[in-house]
Each structure stands twice: as C-alpha cells, then as structure tokens.
Image 1 (cartoon, helix red, strand yellow):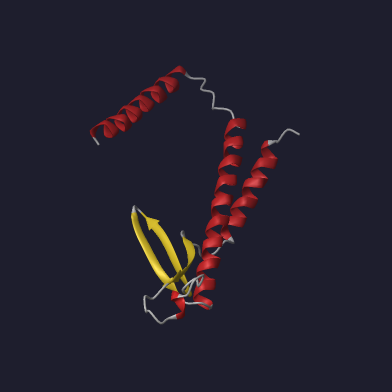
Image 2 (cartoon, rainbow, N blue to C red):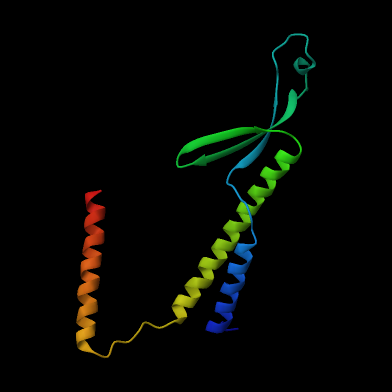
Length: 140
C-alpha cells in the first residue's frame, strides 16, 4: 500500500495530538537496592539475607552530570515511575514523528524556479549561508 501525502499528514497530526497528551516526564531510571549495615548481630549478616531494604533510588545524567535521589515508597515513587514511563512514551512518539516527517519530505518536491535571476539569488544566498556555517564550525 502506497502512503499518500494526505495519509502521512493525518498521521503526523495524530502524533502531535498524542504528544500534547503526554504530560510531565523525566529521564532516568529507578533502581531497587538492599544493603548490609555492618553490625555483627544484625539479621542482615546472616547467610542468604539480601540486606536492609528495599531502598528506591532514582538516577539520571543531564549534560554529563549525574543526579540521584532516594525515593520514598508510595506516592513519590509512583510519581517518578509515571514520569519516566511518560518519557519513554515521548521518545517513541518523537521517533515515529521523525519517520513520518521524513516520508512527507520525500514526497514533497522541491520548488522549481523559472527565473534565472531568482536561481542566481538563491545560489548566492545558499553559498553565503553554508560558508558562514562551516567557518563557525572550523573556528570552534
């Protein structure tokens, strides 16, 4: 089945609508940890005992910096789980949106220029833009 421009644009509109319904989201993971306290007479020192816990820890990295937070069991833990789940939904929708937009861009033809003067103006404009763009990258 060949996808038409109308069908793809309708899909894109639906994806935008779904994106607007996501709500709050955050990156990261939640880990469940058990630990031994180190007291000699504590039950956590017995063989096959997992340790004290569970303790819930949220971890994320933003711009190369790690963040973590201990979460309380209950509403706080549920809030973080929901927000992380929403983030994964956001990623899936964003990926689908990129794919649909690629298909739309491939179906839309480039504008044909009929006037040679307009073609030359566009050519000069693109040359200035691209040379400026690549000079900036070389300087950095």
